[in-house]
Length: 171
Image 1 (cartoon, rainbow, N blue to C red):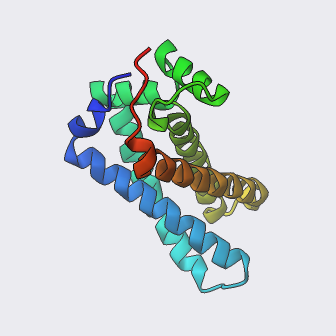
Image 2: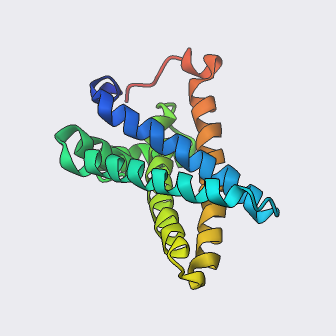
């Protein structure tokens, strides 16, 4: 793995797109749940935030596909190199103490990005009058919520003091 060097090299504008994407998608999940529970006042916020989320997602994809460092990160989150796939496999088997951000959590980031993108696309189609997209939008939102929670749990686990103080195996 690259030892986390991509984190310190990510440009400020790319950090802002990532932060904006995470916040707007999180607010999307909250407002969508509120709307599904009958809080109709959440609809206008949900639509406006969805449009903002689409812009932040576009910015994130632009960084991932349009810059060299972004493509390195893209290979990490979609496990496109043998090293990342091996780390992922070893972590699934429980035989690797490497940081989860290099394996399991990296894959979750990729799945989250794809699910968020497709969910927002279906949401925009709904906003434009394509009611047939509602069920797919809801199912994807539930999947996205699950990915969000698992990613949060793995991130906390990965940064937990007792885990981060363990000596790492260098095989």
